[in-house]
Structure formats: C-alpha cells, structure tokens
Image (cartoon, rainbow, N blue to C red; front, side, top):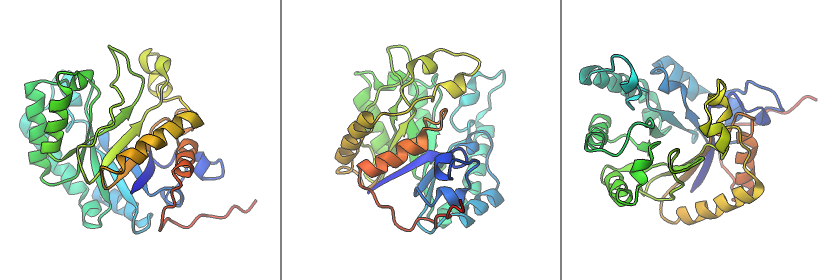
Length: 281
C-alpha cells in the first residue's frame, strides 16, 4: 500500500479552489493522511484531538510529531529538562493521543531529532529509552545529523532501528558533507516506511537569513524528480506493508500540487475519502 500526505492541512490552497485556510475535512477529500506538527511545540489537548477525529473519514490516519522535549531539542537551553521532567512530557503526550490510538487513526509518531543529536552511545541509549517509554507505539525516527549515515555507522543504525521496531525516515533534503542527511532508501519496519520530502533548495536550506525557516522549504519538485521518486516508492513497497510519502516543501504552496502529481504518477486511487465540496462559481 502507498499513501501520500502533507505537513498540516490548512496551508494548501490547491485543495480548496485556491483559498486558504483549508479545513481538515476539505483536506481529507484528497489525501488519506496528514502530519501534525503543532504537537512539537505543545502537547495537544485531548479535546483538540477529538475534534480532529470528528472531521475525518473512517480510514484517515495521522502522523503526529513528538514534542520537542521528547526529542531533546531543549539541550541547547540554559536549563534543559532533567530525566523526571522529560518522562512527564512522555506521559502527557501518550495520554493526549489516546483517542487516535483507540480509533485506529494513529499511523506513527514522528521523532525528528535535532542536528546535534549525533551517533553516540548516550544517544543510542536514549533511543532505547524512547522505545521503553513509548511501549508498543508506532515510532518513526528522523535523523538530522549526518553521523548516523557514516559508512562505519550506517548498518549498525539500521540494525538498531530494526531491533527497536522503529521506522527509519527516508529524508529528501539538500545534503553536503557538513549539512543535511543523505537520501537513504532503507526499510527498517515491515509495517511502515516513511519518506519526508523537504525539497532541494540548497541555498535556502544552508544560508540562515531572517526568513530561513520559510525559505528552506521553498522548492517545487519537477515532473522528472517526481517520476524518479515514484520508481523508488514502487521498489520500497515490495519490502513493507505501507510506504507513506509526506511533502513538506510548502513555502511556495508547492506541496499539495506535487503530492497530487505523485498520486497521478503512481496511479493511486484512495478509498473512503471525505466528500469534496462543490464550487459554486
């Protein structure tokens, strides 16, 4: 099975006759999954999660990003959390997503680690602790530090994630010796493989201007690039139950058009989507 989705639902006018914001229900008329990023900044309320569930059809699923304190983004703060405080965030997060789990709408929890989370014994142990604290929850791991992909570490990284039943996220982003991570199409979980597409805007990714956070994903994949991606996806689907592709290249509102084009190239026909609203004009 192949699924396609976007990061957030509100910022994709191509799904709403060129208008934004886009409702979750309108989004769910086109695509069967979405990635929730707000949870990185604050653990969502259960009432918020229940409201999401009311707006989507039966088979729709969510990828939800782990909170920043679960991925140690606070280590650069003046006073990072201690172990007990961090464990409390894990417990609050698990409690908040119970409605997704109960209703079978949780595809996976995305742990996107910071660039300074490198391949060390301490961080390997932390990954083991993540599995312990998250019990049997589906987990996808996205590394942003190149050391996990060194030739000396690549196989051991893959084996570790297989052992812990983690999905190793396949990342598409600008990559050089000093920045970014390589595109590495590997399967570590037979149930789910995730590809996240950040675009290939090398200048916007590596030069930190005041608008860096917006400019880094300013990229539109060409038809040739999407066709090459489709070929890779078709190979990966032979090794895993589901391949899920998430487009995050939305600074120029290109994510939705790119996603819909990939759906066309892969000849996908998603079932049980929400009803589409008819335009009155």
